[in-house]
Length: 148
Image (cartoon, rainbow, N blue to C red; front, side):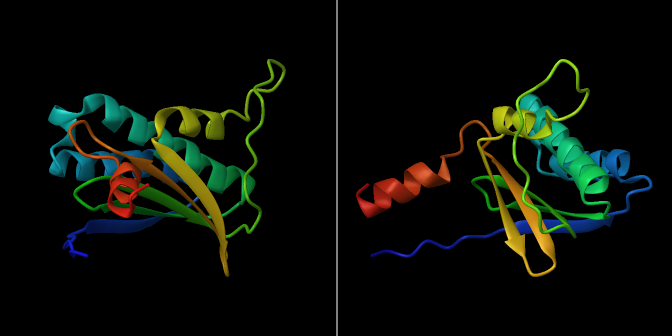
């Protein structure tokens, strides 16, 4: 079995409930521009920013908590993780014309390549993964390496 070296770059920041969503989008956009995504993959930049907005909003509204945002670029995919203080895992809801909310996870499910939520000792984390054009899907590579 051969070994591959992986280099990753990451950033983390906490965003308070009082003014976190707009600040989180701005902060995230700056890092995506630094990666060259603004010119190479502007549609994915929009999807990442929409995901950040939805997940930070969920942390503020449903968990009544600040949100810790972590961006991790591993040269194959961008992993966007939002942590809040509530241990209650989200459950996607069907859109209802009578409710103005409840569409956030459906949006994330549509724009992200994958997403998952998991409990931690001090709350939960929701992570979404984005593969830019020309970069392989990590799951497909893993399947190919394992013979799957």
